Image 1 (cartoon, one colour):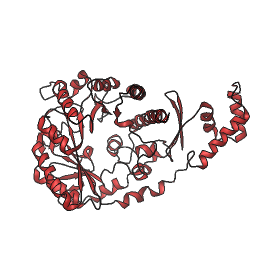
Image 2: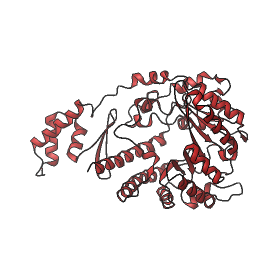
Image 3: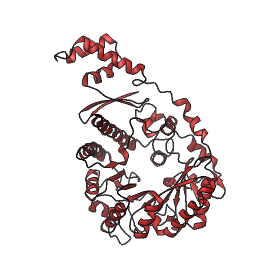
Image 4: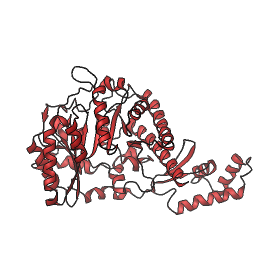
Length: 461
């Protein structure tokens, strides 16, 4: 499957199944578009008709270009057939029952009252609660017991606001470190926080124990304070920004993400990214809001064109700042054109419900944090393990080839079928697709590929 587009002044040809990316001239671009439909002679004639007025264009040069395209096809770099479908189900079967990551909901409560919060201000449609050390300890024991031969395990402290239960977080990390050697495991901890409770103790702990820290900031003060308010309605921007700056500085400006959300109020989110950059943050992520279609924050069809333009301008900004010696990272544009994720990840996706699960303060297991509170998706608990095998098997069968809508999509081996939670909330099925999100994803991938191709070309000079 071939995908062709022009962006940033570059004619780009992507061979979807091999992952090969070709930056070509206009003639080769047009010839590739006709390659499977017309004969060699017909394509050369068509190019002579279109470009024959140019001094550097003649039949001999066009024939050589055609032959080079054929060489790329024979080398498996153009028009590569899709041979992955038969292995889609088998790959997940090989890791059945092996868990590698947990999202510990140490606090189903929050000190902010964000109107767009998918987690209902941390309550997840239930009661406010915090996780006890005993429940968290059992969750870590569950992870070790079900991790098979995996050495590296991942745990994210999540909420609500996890720092509202910071003492338990610290005790759980200490416990995990105390049993690593015994079980030949290594824990990688991450922390997601709104920043209100960050202090020197939190900073020291995060820098010592957390491989990554996710910090919630929506960019512009007026945008952030419109949504991310306390229960008295006061904005949190001025309170948290200095704390974020102090934490990031203490981490040497590495191993963190400034994570924002854009909504109907700010589809022009590049302005928010620019504010983050001006504040000294260089590891950035801006995610489209996840909410009901009738929510005032929901992105509309009219917003889509604005968002897509923002993605293009963001790629241009990244290229320009890199040339100026001021690079920054945007999470959704992180792509490796030389290697990239293995075919297992490309087909199977994030592993929610199988390799990855969320744990509530009561020890219940769910496929991921976005399913918590949806009772029918409860998998079991950390004491008895997974007993709702029907749901686990449903997620195990979830892959890019299980979704008919993905069949002819050029981006399917980049998104791996997309987010099961978004699909469920949009269509009622984890095997559905969130069409609006698909449109945004394809645009992000086009921009990411273009920006990375420019970087590689300039590095090779």
